Every structure is written in C-alpha cells, then in structure tokens.
Length: 154
Length: 285
Ligand SMILES: Cc1cc2nc3c(=O)[nH]c(=O)nc-3n(C[C@H](O)[C@H](O)[C@H](O)COP(=O)(O)OP(=O)(O)OC[C@H]3O[C@@H](n4cnc5c(N)ncnc54)[C@H](O)[C@@H]3O)c2cc1C
Ligand code: FES
Ligand code: FES
Image (cartoon, rainbow over all chains, first blue to last red; front, side, top):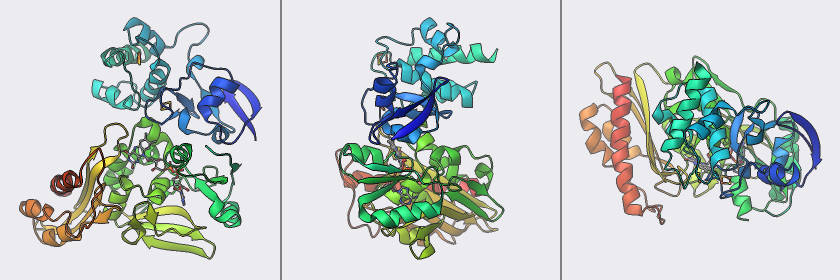
C-alpha cells in the first residue's frame, strides 16, 4: 500500500505492506536506525518516536497508520549541528551508559517537557515510566531532563 | 503477523459498509494497543483491518452542563488532559491517568478499551461506577446499552458482529458528588491487578444518597458491587469499612495468574473499595 509521510521534515512516499510495523519502516525502509527495537511488545519504550506531536511506541503502530503523518525520530532533534537541549542534558549529566534506551528516553522526555516545561522529579519519573533502562538506575536520566528543563525555560 | 488488507474509511457510513461486507474476516482498529499485540502473537489474525482513526467525528470529547460525551476514538490522553473534566467529573481524568504509560495513553482509545473488555482494563470499572451509556451503530441503526448490561465475560461484551461502538455518554454528577479510582498496577504493563472506581452523592446530612462501585481485575468481567452499594446508601463515612467487606459478594470465579492469586485480588478489591469510597466521600463533602 502507498503511504506518504514526513519524517524529520522530509516528505516522501513509500510502498509498504500493511503488516509492517512503523519501527521497521523507519529503520529498514527509511534507513533511520536511531530508533531502537528493545522488546517489540510495547513495554520498553526504546522504539518511541513523535507521531503528529505525540510520543508513541512505534513497535505498536502500523506504518500504514502513519499515512499522512509527521514523524520526528531521534535523528530529527538536533538542529544545524547543535544538540537539542535534552540531548545535551544526557551528555552533560551522564544520562546514558550503553545508550540503547536513550533515543526512546529522549523522545519521552521531549513529550514531557512539551506538556510540562518545569516538571518535578516525580513528574519526570512518571513521564518516562514507559521507558526501561537497564544501565543507569534512572537517576542520571532524571538529572538530564532537569538540566534540559532549566535550559529550555531560561 | 499474518498478512491482511487495510482499509481506512473516512466516514462512519463507509466504515459500517466495510464491517458488514467483510463480516468475521475483519477487525476494526482503533488505537491498536490491544489489537496489534494480539496480532503479533497471532491470537488475532484478521484478513481485513478497518482503521477507524480517520472516521470524522469519533474523537470528540465534550463536557456539557448535563452530559459528558466521549467519542469512542478519543484517546486516554484526551480524557486525561481535558480542561473541563476535572471539575465536571474528576473520576474520568483520574482513571485515564492510571492507564499504562504516556505513550500508551497517547494512542489507546476509550472505546477500544471498552470494546476489548480486558478483565484487567481500567475503564470498565469507571464506566460502571458512572452508569455510562454506550452508543452502538449496527446494521439496523443505532442502539444504546448501559455499562451494567455491556460487560458479559472475559473479553466478551454485548457488542454484536457488525457493530461499532461510537460514543460513551455520562450524566454529569450532581452537586455534592465525588469519585475516586484506586488500583494496584501490574508493574510491567500497568494493567490492574485490581481496580475499584467509586462515585457517591451525599445528602444534606452528609450521608450517601447514592453509591456506585465498579470493580475490575478481579473477576472475568468488571462488575458493579451492588452489595457494597446497598450497605452504604443512607449511611455516612463510618459505614464504609463494613460495606467494603462485601466487595466480592456474588463473584463465583476469580482471575488468577502468575501475577496475583484469586485470594489476593479479592483482598485488594475489599481494601481498595474502602479506600475509593472514603476518598469519594471526602471529595463530595
Ligand atoms: C504496554 C501497554 C500497557 C497498557 N496498560 C493498560 C492499563 O494499565 N490499563 C488499561 O486499561 N489498559 C492498558 N492497556 C491497553 C490499552 O489501554 C489499549 O489501548 C486498550 O485496551 C484498547 O484500545 P485501543 O484503542 O488500542 O483498541 P484496539 O487495540 O485498536 O482494539 C481492541 C479491540 O476492540 C475492538 N474495537 C476497537 N474499537 C472499537 C469500536 N469503536 N467499536 C467496536 N470494536 C472496537 C477491536 O476490533 C479490537 O478487537 C495497555 C496496553 C499496552 C500496550
Ligand atoms: S520495542 Fe517498542 S516498546 Fe519495546
Ligand atoms: S543506558 Fe543502557 S539501557 Fe539505558
């Protein structure tokens, strides 16, 4: 089936099988491998992307459901070679170790800060509860989001 | 996933036509957060998928003076974040906020959750406690069903083949009403090991003029705890503990799995009934 999508600002059309998951479409068809597949069962959040402004787990969305949509992946956050403040926060606060969860974490944090620019620590933990990290113990991720929140609101 | 044909109708009429034409071979798709996982596991293998998300008018959430209407395709987040609902009927956004995680709430729909009738889903308890009415479009036109007649058994509802749930209607609670939803989350998914929704209205003396309690996660289908309600009507907050002891009266079969035994779920149902009722009465006062 033919679909048209705008991925990180670039409008294109593709021919996909209806059963193809959005995450496989982004990785294998569009070639953007920043979005990870952790569990493929909607639990880990590694596959999170922005779909028309909403963070979604792209392993639980069909590519055909994104027909006509705007998608932002982790590759679309940095602008003109400058890291996005959330990415910078992860860099500065050691918000990652192996980095596997990081693209999804950053997308979840992006959604949170859009809806709640000055979240409390509890708000941050709740905002990223759909994302699992097996390395950091989360504290440095929380710090990274606080760093970004400060930078984006001052 | 086994292969399937995909249709994305733009109107309810064309969706209805597709649903009739393909019959049992087809599944309608809302947020896909129950259907797609089932299709991955091949628990569901429809040869036709009819995506309702582009159907005009099914996503609207309105809160009028008398009635709250939730389009079947409204997401959990649309209810969680609606500006008027906290003051009109706080039980709705409170329940929405308890579902899964932010990404799941962005995608999953209220109507999809109700139609799916997972025994551990949150909405059924709240819809029962709010005496919701479900509007259903079918081959012979529209019909409305009360929540109390809708949830039949494990994943079984009153929805008939060829029917689409279009809207949920809830009467705005009277003055001096309060609601609360209390649940224990299964820690990976967030689904309810047990969840209790309570909605009460107080009389001038501060006693319960009306009480409604919905329980999910405990039995094959969510149910109204009528024995609790009967024990509390006309009584005040002091009677809550005794009334809540009846939370599982009449339940013949308990949900039981590696997450929680039937006994544990029954215990949670009684404890959460007490907590939900106490909070609801506090909020009503
Ligand atoms: C990781 C994860 C965590 C979750 N946690 C929770 C939780 O804590 N609590 C909770 O309650 N739920 C939870 N869910 C389930 C989630 O809320 C689902 O979104 C919801 O149960 C189904 O809604 P949907 O819109 O995704 O429906 P779909 O998956 O699209 O459809 C589900 C079923 O209902 C049918 N259907 C859908 N819409 C209609 C309609 N309008 N008319 C007739 N039939 C229809 C479909 O054909 C299908 O059989 C979770 C899901 C995931 C993936
Ligand atoms: S890969 Fe999608 S949630 Fe884990
Ligand atoms: S940094 Fe390794 S999983 Fe999060």
